[in-house]
Length: 284
Image 1 (cartoon, rainbow, N blue to C red):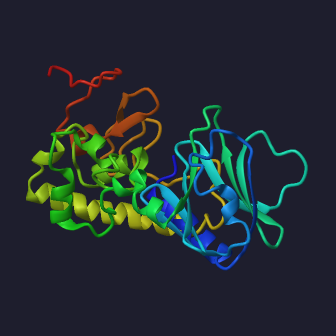
Image 2 (image 1 turned 90 degrees about the vertical axis):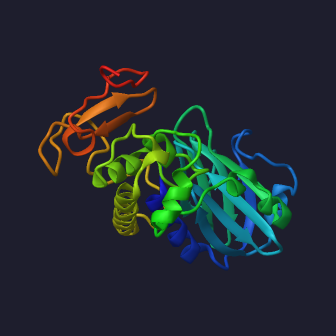
């Protein structure tokens, strides 16, 4: 799934390419993509794009006249600016926003579930749009007290809390793993129990990991979200490789859709998490 660095780079590139361009048409190729009927999608036609922005894992387009397009790519959605297609749309095409200059902003779905969504909203709709209003703060520059507030509450474990957009926006499983590794924090530590020193390490690590990833993303993403993120990560990915810091074999916990990878020496005082779907500590 694209995360904050990739989506921010895409939003910046699309903002530079689309600002001032007039929408000439909108074509929905998959019936489940558009999630709102009012205002009608046809209301976008003839209006220039004012800006493109990102919040959390959402991409937004502001269009003149107080209209907004909010796109949630989910895990398999991809958004790209390309020449206006002719003929029958490709199987992966979900929606096209046609623009003057014979280009289109195309949303594609790389999986059969087609979970990516598009909402067309007016100002009031945007102000009340729950996927936006429920988001927590952005993580870069959040600071110790901001992280303390974000992670407090119901006692969630750290790796879950970092990926909860209601606590902090824009982090997914890839960068959550790298942030925890950089901060030497155990993935199954209770998020609300981190002391001042641990919170300081978390704040520094989140800033460093996400800022560096954003700079790398800006070098390869402008107006197209690639099918593969091609991230450079320290621990996210196949387990079994040596830790870049201490050389210990990286271990993992398998979930339904991904593996949580960590270093036992750097993060868990040598403890190995049980490699099974329920993810319980050995001996706990």
